Image 1 (tube, rainbow, N blue to C red):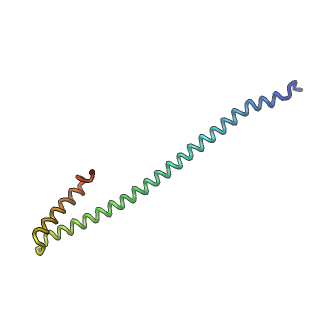
Image 2: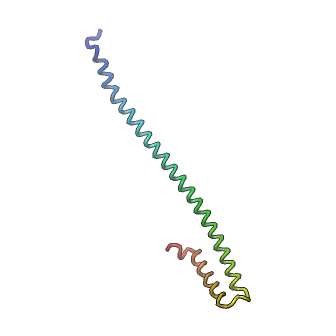
Image 3: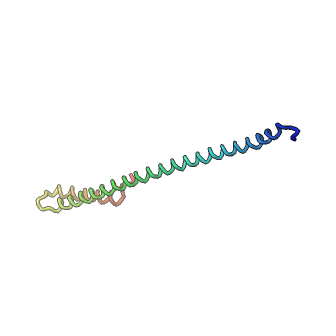
Length: 107
């Protein structure tokens, strides 16, 4: 027989409590890292969708600029257009070229 019957339970409690604390701490740490990873993944997905939308908008603007440039070129070269209108169209074409080359996009 065991001389001190409660000592076994105290031993289990002494060994079990740190193990339980360690397990709970590990679970909490793992869960927090998992949540951070999920949030980071969502942020990346949001950025990717915003980037795709911006790229679509840029392509649309590039098409609009090309159409405007073509229209101004046609306008400035048409014989029935007064000279001052043709000069204005040419100046606008130069502005469009400068913008599309990125010289003024930094501002």
